[in-house]
Image (cartoon, rainbow, N blue to C red; front, side):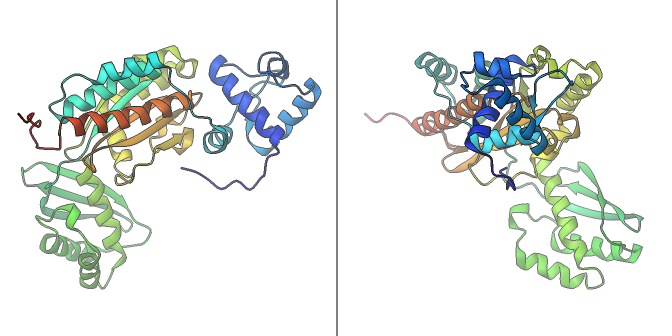
Length: 361
C-alpha cells in the first residue's frame, strides 16, 4: 500500500529517519540525538540532528511523546520507511535451515501446509502469525431476501445451499423505498440464485441494473456486499503465537489487549477485512496502524501475502505485531516461506485435489 509523498526529504533527513525507525524497533523507546551519534554511527553534530528531527516532526514523520523525550516514528514515518528506506534482511544459513526444517515434513494436504507455515512464521519473527485458507469454489446462495430498514439502511438475508443463513447490514449513499427492495429481491433470486460468485460478470451486472431501472446504483453496492459475505463463507483462519503480543509494551493496556484477543478469537472481523483484499496478485500487503480495516488494530501492523500452489491461490499468510515491527525480517521470512512452499509442493505435485506423484521406476 504505497502512497504519494508531497514532501521530498533530503538524504540527511532520510538517513536520520531510517536510523530512528530502526533504533525504535530495537529499543521500544523514544530515540534522542545522543543515541543516534553514539550508537547508530551518524556523524552529524547533536544540534544538527535535533534540528533535522524537529523538521521531520513538523512534516509528520516523527512524534515526540514527551517534551523532554526523544522522537518516535509516526504512522507516516513507518510508511515512508517501508516504501522507501527498507533494506532487505538477509537470513543466516542457520535461520534458513531452521525454516526449511519446519516446512520439510511430508505435506499431503493444504491444511498441513498452512499449519507449518503459520508455526514457522511465528517462531522466526516472534510475532503473531495467521493463515487463511482460500474460500472453496462452488459456494452459492439459493435464496435472497432484501429487507428495508430505513431510507439509507437495508439488510441482505442470504440462504446457502446447505440452508445456513447469513445476514449483511448495508448502508447506502442514497435513499431507497420498500418497493425498490421488493424489486431487488426478485432480481437477485432470478439472476443470482445458484450462481457462483466467480461467474458474476459485467454483462450480468448490466442486466440486473437494467431491471432495477428505478434504482440502478443499488446493484453494484449489494452485489459487492454479497461477494464479501460469500468470500467469508468457507474461509478458515487460524492463529499462532497470540501470546507473543504480551511481550511488547504497545499491548500493555489491558482493555485494548483484551479487545484485540477477542477480535482474534472471534475471527469474523479479520476475515471480513481480509476478504476485501485483492486475492489475485502476489504482492505483499502492509497495513500500518490506522490503515488496518479492523479498528482495534490501529496500534498494530498487519503484513499479508497470498500463498500460491500451481498458480492457484490456496490461502494466505500474515503477521500481526506492533507498528514498531522488524519489517525487514518479517518481509524476508514471508517471502522465503512463500517461495519454499511453492518449491516443496511443486516437488511433491501437491496441486489441490491431486495425489503425491509416484516415483517412476
